[in-house]
Amino acid sequence: MNKSITNTIKGFLPILEWLPNYKKTDLQGDLSAGLTVGIMLIPQGMAYAMLAGLEPIHGLYAVTVPLLLYAIFGTSRQLAVGPVAMVSLLTAAGIASLNADSPEQYLLYALSLAFLVGLIQFGMGVLRLGFVVNFLSHPVISGFTSAAAIIIGLSQIKHLFRINLPNSEHIQEMVVAIAQNIGDIHWLTFGIGVVGIIIIKYGKKIHKSFPAPLVAVIVGIALVSGFDLTNQGVRIVGDVPSGLPTLSSPSFDMEVWNTLLPIALTISLVGFAESFAVAKTIQAKHKNYKLDANQELIGLGMANFGAAFFRGYPVTGGFSRTAVNNDAGARTGLAAIISSILIVLTLLFFTGLFYNLPSAILAAVVLVAVSGLIDYKEPIHLWHKDKSDFAMLIATFLITLTLGIETGIIAGMVLSLIVVIYRASRPHMARLGRVPGTNIFRNVSRFKDLEERDELLMVRIDGPIYFANIEFIKGKLDKWIAGKKDKVNMIVFNMESVTNIDSTGAHELNEWILAWRKSGIDVCMSSIKGPVRDVLNRWGILECVGADHVFLDDNSAVSAYDKDIDLELLDKYSPYATQTN
Image (cartoon, rainbow, N blue to C red):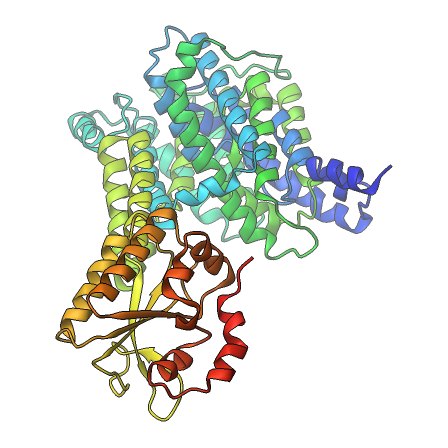
């Protein structure tokens, strides 16, 4: 087979990279990691499904076929894909607006959401749009994640306290409802939940491979069974269907799609951003493979297709499970396949064991998991290092808490874009002066001893010249000219940091040059990059400036102004300063 075709197939099916070359030495690590993560997935899957508003069994369905599909199509060999707290909450928030009439209809909407997420992620991967996730800046993700973690935590209070609370994603409504119902706490349920939290939180201190969530589940079941706590008001999971997930189909009703599309986009972007971030962190420790952002999108898209057609709900890569997977020795995607097999065995033979599982234990699983998502250090760090990013984080955090998950992430993305546009519209500009005794020029605002002449204005623009920043650039130039009390008779544009000039920028630059020259101020340019010279040539600006006013460097420009330069030497090197395509 043609080598390029083989590489293309391997690119689309990364499993063909590692499976044919599988080493026996990797089996022990993969087996250990697969079993460890599989054990974690059982209580987590059930707990997150409840958080999403589904029956616990659908959390287990979501870690069968989706895991296998990601192992085939994903490029990370350690990423543990499945239900996560954030996506589960987003799922519940997205479906709430559809007002499902029955659990079956609610499930249909969850399947449809998984299908839409798969479609968006797969499409983005095929179209190589992995870069889009860069619009979610780190401060936005941090603020959004911390706020969502708090909302998720509060949503579990009803299971931990066994009190009636409305389904809401607004902190003000949740806090008021908790305050109104706090007197109805069922203390026995609360006690079981606290025991579960203690086991899960501190069990890892015994050993990093200690299956704390599973132990909490076993303890909870034992307490309910041993002391007949259901008759004392402790709520349990009840019947958990056995058997493998049957084929299912999402809804193709366009009205449903239109309603779910905003939350599907949110899950697609947030899920991929977090998944790729943790995959990148883990991959840095393994130099035997490379991550591909676009193929990761395809892998996650395929996993969500699997969830849509096998009774699951949207999935993505999980932080804690991926870390455990790596620490337990995962070397290849076989670890994920082993985890999936363990879930299949559980579905076939062991679901009956979960009948007496207290809902408070599942709430404890979620609470401990999301507590690690609240980032206290990042806001403090940004406050000291970058006030604008700090403001963006806090704004996203508060909007998400008060106005809801969907509004929060959209507001965060808009804030990110506004900050990018604001910064792009105000490029750094430097007025240059000569370092004494040298031919080197530096920013006069940074160094006090530089030599600067009143009749010369030497300027460096650090960034593109385009429609969004021309007014700012012109305003700063006018201010500097006025600051020299109109003594300027030559402007030297150092263009070494100008990366591009658009049509608006070219038009305005031409107008500036003509206006300055008309007022008696000459203009020259130095250090122009080749692509920028091509643009200036296309718009006739090089001709307007004149070849004898374009120089290799600042010193040549100043020497020519002083008429202290060898003209033959200037002509010799002129092509290096002016040549275009």
